[in-house]
Image (cartoon, rainbow over all chains, first blue to last red):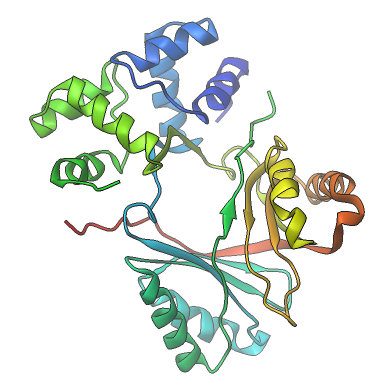
Length: 149
Length: 161
């Protein structure tokens, strides 16, 4: 899907916070020099085209009582598929990426409580016989990401 | 912040996204039998308390052609980690930046910054920019490129009342 300069301006603006007013898209459209109907049509098109996966509130799962933890494992190459299957079988595993490193499997655990993070990680260690290194977030810094305009 | 049943209902109603209509909060309000004012007030309170981080679009890095992602990791002195993390996180090409505990002796890195690009060269260049910014404040660094996505499911929020 092709995106033009206005689409990019919309993506960059809507990566930041939407105003909490009755007609928020009209307010953003005015900032971008377009109108509400055009902005909504483009937003719908960007979503349908898969350029944005979702538009709405980003909730802090920890503030809602949930917990997250980035975890990593050093999986011997010959066991990679087997370990991946065991790890992915846990519903608490939200994302899992293979990465280029001796720590070659990186996944995020999402649970309702902090205690469950360790319980699930311990279970994965028992099931696989491999260490699960835990990298909980200590601090998150301002997200400055923007699409090249 | 203590969330009540109405806040929970509002979270459940909007976690898949807001309706893309001129008055999205009025539409959410109607579905929940609330007034538009109350929805805006409650969402504002949740945003002020950090329960809502922001109301925004989630970009698909792959669809934007940013298929290469590198997790750059840095070993910075703990006493400077806040200051340096804020500087790295403010770079416009860094999508996520976190301070995490080290796992010594296997893992000396405490600052994690995600970069995306359309090519290996582009992510290498972004890593070099971060390295130039940190200079000698980072004792060691690596970049872990993603090879493939093994699993990706949506975020599931706690639904406890």
